[in-house]
Image 1 (spheres, rainbow, N blue to C red):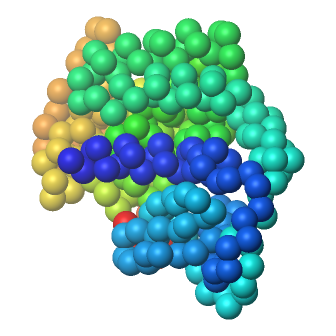
Image 2 (image 1 turned 180 degrees about the vertical axis):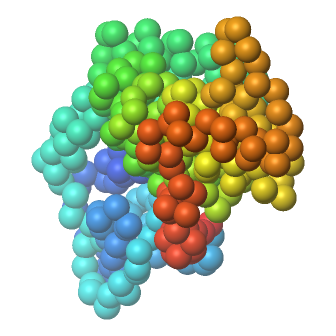
Length: 319
């Protein structure tokens, strides 16, 4: 049930303005009613008559129709005592709005509908279904500007689909996707931070090591586990001190991920380093530290997102 609600909200955010262009009448109505103004968090405004406003939902009547929004998307409501026409959207403005969407997303309305339909299976708990959807989107990107659309769509997504779209963007164009993925290493959702670290590690670039290592001191253990795998994938022996600190975690999963990362970093084709306890690994590191340039001290690392930033982001996006 929660997944269905999240999916509906994600799609609603992405197509809200498109729907308004279709729902709103394109003639001026002369009904004598009050006109309220909704100010949305994306900077847009809607004028009409608010008929419902509670913690979950805002419903606004516009002309002969109405639209429902998540209360989380509304910055504020201005109650007016203005009388007269309930809306002033003309045919020309509707066309300008549609042209603007075409330009911003790089797709026509019909193409956007097709891409959204292809995105739907990314919500599936079945990895085979998600893989099939990613493959389809990749094929579609060879014929139309799917990357541009998904990149503009991504900030409005939540839940399971966000990491899948990040992965799809990297599959389509790794170079173009990297900056977008990097921004998600500081996202308030730990699942998004974890996936972003995994994807950044796939670039095999030493310049990303600091970002990956900061994940080892994240406030969420899921992210710390992803960071351990990420620095190992980068073959970053300099992260050993930070991994040794992570071995002290009270979470067995973080301990195991850190231990596995250390084994991967220090084992070779001819010799496997298969130590278990923190004491054994600390002794091993003392014998190898001189071989490693610029080891990363865990005390020098700051979390990818601070507790204050996380609290603020959670509060502003709480649904």
